[in-house]
Image (tube, rainbow, N blue to C red; front, side, top):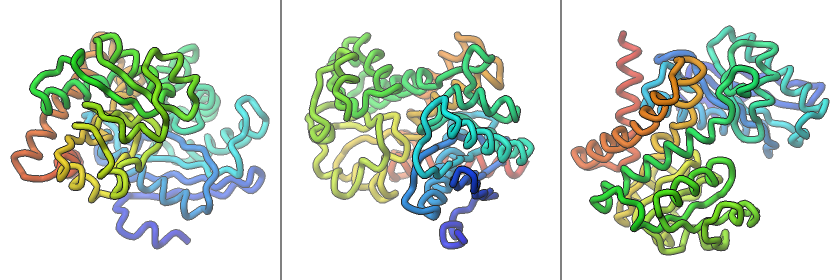
Length: 349
């Protein structure tokens, strides 16, 4: 049914279930288990068609393989998509039914895939999943989990901005920088706080102006987020914002953000380079979330070790920038090369 989507994917397994009682298509894409069980979040949203939902799962699972690899974690890449007619309210019986049946599907894979939260799912859902299967990360702290990994993501992006500014401007002193944050949700708001604490000038845009108002950042219009002159643009909302249409309109020197899949197409990395805009590959910059979950829930790190590993994103990006310069390739290609080499090496062991 989804043969065209699967062509060229290169993953290991796609699990498909149609849950008739809730009219929900459930897809779990296992891209790679070379480094360990496939781990990735659960995205719940309506899709125009099941085929679109599969495409999302496959694309995101591949990105997760690379994210886990560059982060040096004992996990491979996977992603789950729950294609619901509409997102059920938190605490509702409808939501409990979808999550419960999905948990059973995860458990049936016997640890090949470990789930976590993503769009429209959270710690409460992970707590409910944990009642039926042990293959879950991101439970609430009350129930022994790491809770919302948004803090880890934001801290990691902050360090990514430092490393990128050091590469672009010769210094990681952010007090002299103007940064536009696109999206002031869970991660964006935390990132704004980190940036303001070190004296950066921060402007922010969000579809909900109240979110920006609560951060202390200078509000700008959503439509102006990509075109406002700044040193660093930090996409922290929807993906696909860097495209053939938007890149010519950018007024930044660098792009470093928390959003997944910021490039609309792989070719957009070269378009950024042609404009001399330094791009920090998204799955390198935003790896703090998976580091947070794996470190606290799987590897038993303490807070000091966690802070050190999140700061280590700076070194990872320095390696990416050096590889790109040495090879005459884009930073996106350099990050892919590092990730794929690590996955291939694990497969040879």
